[in-house]
Length: 130
Length: 175
Image 1 (cartoon, each protein chain N blue to C red):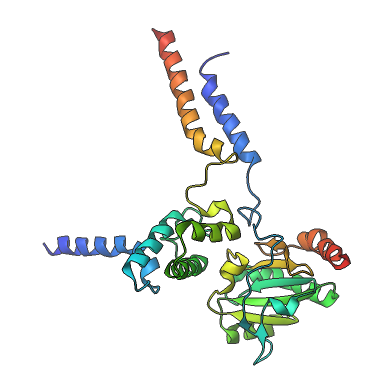
Image 2: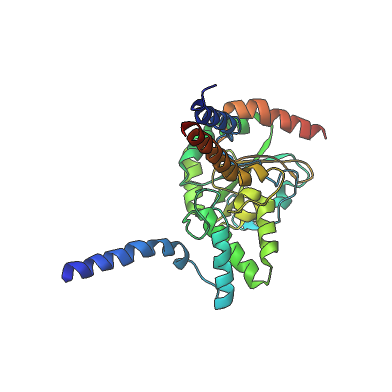
């Protein structure tokens, strides 16, 4: 029983480590605003550790960005305005979901195209066998 | 053509397409702030006790701004280059200590030499958003109108200084 409790405690501590990136900073006092800010953190990329979102990254630059986003949310800026502010400084790459445009249409469609190609080839292969 | 070659060919084409588009090390994309005047900031000066450090200082002059920190390992690599550049007098070099304490910055410069005519301290990262910083070191070249003419997001190399930065500075001086 003791070892099970210990195991559970260890799991709680380890899985909550991702929350540390946010808990060591000052959250906004208004809970609704803080929730909006955190939602945004999950939609934005950390430019230093590029596979992480702003929500998870402990990098200094990410902290500065989160502070700026919180301050803009508290000032009543819309999500669009905040994203615009960030893309004007870091480019579209900061959005976890890149906007659909002439440049990115291939990026968005390529998984579908590759899947279609794979299915077509598989079908042809099985037809020949039969 | 044998059908089983098709997936292999597709993979080779994909690898080729990706290889062609590989970004340069040190940058994910050119800074969208090129050609713009950054947001204003006001910081304490590192050089003068009561002084201030802001873009006002370099208004009207072609300037190289180097963002560094005493805890930054790769800043050491470019420091010798900056010292040489400062000695040559070809461009005015200003420094910005990022997310660091004034005493640590001063000690670091005392030990390694100070290439900056003036320097400022940004202890809490107020300039991160204004300059679009992704870390340190970064180097900016400002034109006479205070616009960002160049931004390096990696330690400077000799090649870069001689073949990109110095010619750029000359062109900007002539404007």
